[in-house]
Image (cartoon, rainbow, N blue to C red; front, side, top):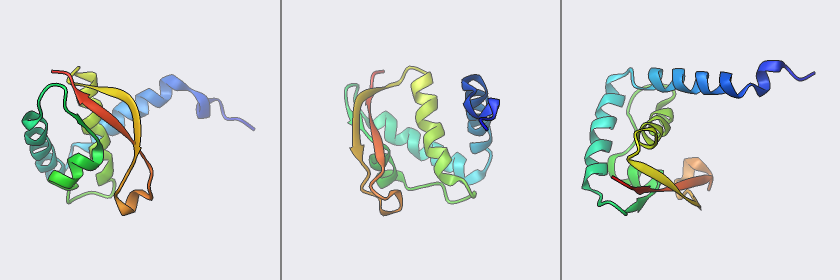
Length: 110
């Protein structure tokens, strides 16, 4: 019953990276990324923040059916670039459309 691709870590990473590339393709996402960059560079090294903090400040991209994916892609690109690190702490989201879901807390490291 288990499909081999259902539990293929390498394929999951490939699909994630493909999704990240697609997430940045609209004008609304480009504007979001610009505003998110301004938010990030206003932080000091050692400051902690969550996706809620980012969205509270800059909002969500205004285009695209998967506009929330742009937020995850933004965090992943900063983490892969060595600009942020997960603190190991998880906090409940305050955003109503997240239904009190879990948010990672991140720290700016450079």
